[in-house]
Image 1: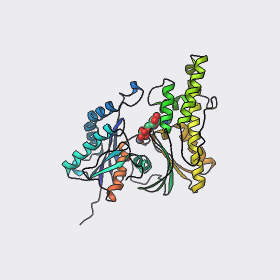
Image 2: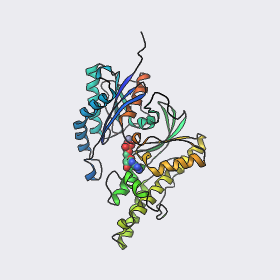
Image 3: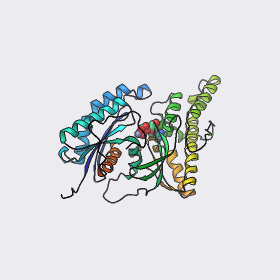
Image 4: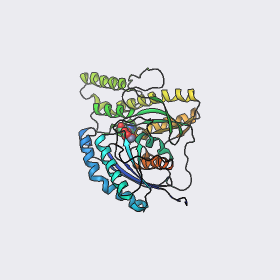
Length: 346
Ligand code: KG4
Ligand code: ZN
């Protein structure tokens, strides 16, 4: 049989509060449409029920738009990739059900993708024909998002090993929860990032964990931040308003110090100096600058994703789908999304 020249994959992402669809052709990105749900802002966090409803409302429009921008018709698709977890179950179910319906009606395979693999492989997204600067295997990836903080050894496209992970909160959660303490809107990470630019990062000291090995912990920092604010407010009710920039900058610096402390140890232990960052928190300007600093001072080869590929998007899901499809890793139609999913689960 003659080999098909082009493989076109539609990716669907609906794990949290972004409804997204993308088309990838032979690993090259043709379109990536993201509808970020703004409804959650006023609640100070994602409301699962509202997220599912918004996905249900948006998904048809988002998928049609992705196909239209890619100039690809449904009949040209080879497979449908969708996020099978981790994430909010109601949100995942919308994407999974939609993907199943399409897969059955078009008679093409379904590929369930682990969302976290998507964040890592976002480094291989290319928009042009020629190869852009992508990491060589093996490399280390600091995956920092709203729900995850881990250091992963990436041996191949679909071959990973977790070297260290958080034992409690994720880095993104530390940003979001501390922002909430200061009465800042959700998601707090980008707001703290912005305020930090005009704040003194050495003004406040917050506690850093001292757990052995390569694991992270952020719950102590969150408590230390909360107590500092509470104690200062007892003396000065305007403490937050008067010090918000310095609080933000000091918090951001502490989170980055914690992340790099372990990352540096892993680089030393493994001898691997190719280091990537990914996930929503990798959009943070302080974290990105620290990577550049380490590239210069410690001669790390660093990989920093485009801002648009840091937060949730279907482009990364379509790309993982492409690699899985190539390896014959097809999901049965009985596949069910899972809110919690083992990182190693392909
Ligand atoms: O990867 P993501 O979009 O969703 C998950 O899979 O969790 O990550 C969302 C997280 C949120 O905690 C958000 O506050 C954080 O990424 N984030 C940032 C920045 N942009 C997004 N944190 C710090 N600085 C940013 N610029
Ligand atoms: Zn994510």
